[in-house]
Length: 243
Image 1 (spheres, rainbow, N blue to C red):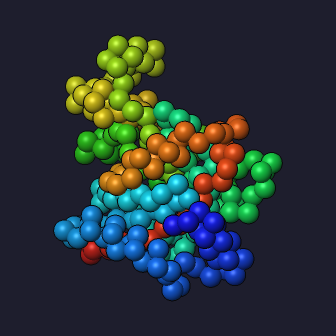
Image 2: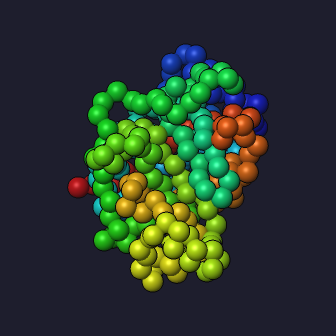
């Protein structure tokens, strides 16, 4: 979508209070239709299209983390993320968004402390299911709380590329990490953030749009906030019968 048209559409939606699950424009319809090709054969997992001013991404949500999955789906369906920013971006680490206070934030406003109405989401760590912080992992942000409960709206997508073996070994030693051989293989071939395993809940993964992820990650920033706003909109692509 032409960036000017996207920004205008987001501005109108923001001002009117109309959710984007109104009548879609041609570009939105095309993006949803094309993205649905990726999930046409899936009858077990829910998928979401994340449209941004840098391009589009498609994520799959894990059924192994039902609390986070259902919370995310409810907010996507309600249009909660419409016009919000990726407000914290660190190249070779991750991109973070979902703070409702970012919607109308001025350039000087500090963002990151906002939350949606309701309680935090209890942690759902599933390393037993081989769910790790590999590159493309969709995970929940959180405050420094003893239960490690998640924010009920803020999320991040891991962008860190593959580690060199020597680099990973040094990090393991410095942080006193305990990784399986499988994890080591993932982090040295796919990439990711091993020090976050067991500390933050991963509840999905990026399937399409890694080039968009990288494009957002290299956006010039000040105090980790992009100098040019990167806004998002989300569309539910499918919702199979979930337990």
